[in-house]
Length: 349
Image 1: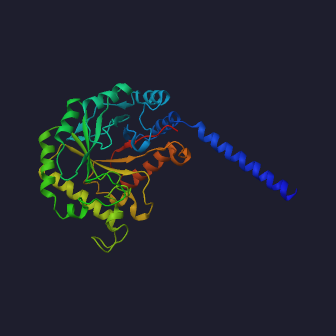
Image 2: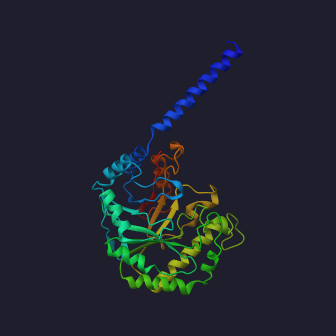
Image 3: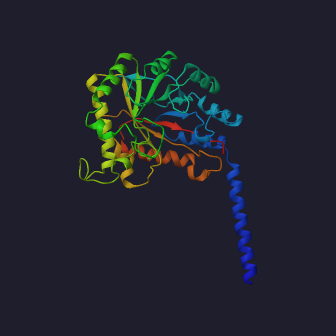
């Protein structure tokens, strides 16, 4: 075969593969991704909760009603009796229900994640024709650490359980350390009075609360990631054999829960919430290293998002792969705690 003919043949083959890849990509849809996710979820009996992030942030199309087909698929799965809406508690702690999964959501409490209202909760539930077990929202600290009485009472009045994300941020700029809130200062007790007041408020509510601190700590989009506290260095804080970044987060979280226990806010169930993909993807940034320990945490949770933008590669974020990776990390962190999908979502593909 001549060089020209060989080159032409290679070009044709390359074009065919490119065409196949494009057609393959176009074949997949949000509906199919959701189907794959819920089908894969059936393989994990020890994942006892799943919570959808229903918001179109950063030009995404995550909302369940982004298309009629996607909404229909979503409703068909969550409408199953396998997903339950009533939470069970024992000794003031949320407990798993064998053979079932709690279904919950962030029902679009706006871009700041704290615009809590009954109408946002009920509108979402009407859309999916199912009650949610809890409503998930952010308690942004801004300039002060203040217990979110209004938001919590609003959720309680709907008959749902409040799930509070304690977010140590004064602004919404990502990928940099926060100008006000510093984890070292939490450890050193600078904010003990404010945190004590926060937990006194939680105790006074006298209702069950679900709480997490430092959402997705293994992603450096948030200012509490270890990148901003020494990354993998081991000689600037604490244990000389432990990476400083995760160790500082771990100790800050422990300090917060210690204050909670001193106040006697026994109505709180504590979650540890990581992202399935660490960024940066380095050994020191492993969620295992951030974990406060079984004596502090009641549940493990994870974020497992699919593609955010139309055109993102489906095969890079296949639901079965995300769930397998998340489950392996759950087991690595602790075999003694119940597991939850605290955030998941996917755009229209």
